[in-house]
Image (cartoon, rainbow, N blue to C red; front, top):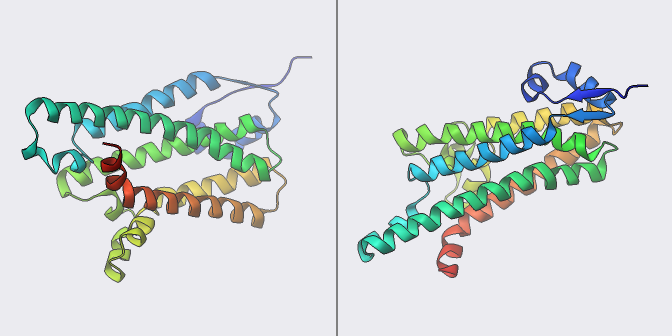
Length: 226
């Protein structure tokens, strides 16, 4: 008997979610996974290279630009670009594999099927980062005060950087990701919906706290390793 096969289609996992989750859940053989993983890796790297090329996030290397000669400044830009590529690769690995492992620990779902869902999560995150480009370029707004996040609201109530960064990490894209993960996990697993919500929200709280900490201390770390 031929094993049931499913060819992954990331767009249809958004537009025809229940139909494709059913096929994914029943599938014994999954196709098109490695092609899409490679595509997403390249797309992630290109997104971060693009933002670096536009000079977004280069405050750290531009702060003392007058003290540098041309060669030193270009070397710093090259290292910054290399750092962005490295960060893109780490982000790709973390979102696809580490996040999937966390959800696998608490849900009776195939690990491979979980990282297929995380591929769509990464896709949404890349779209969010692309929206940062016009906001930074034309409006001069950092990501944590994007009008699509809660960072602006937080800045009216506190001047504590970490708190602003934390709420800045919570955006409509992140809320959509939470909703999407809960819907998919509740479909694929037998875990009670309440526990699914607890697990997903808890994971994102950790991610937002980690993002805020990295943002707060990124300049300090940069000068520490120079």
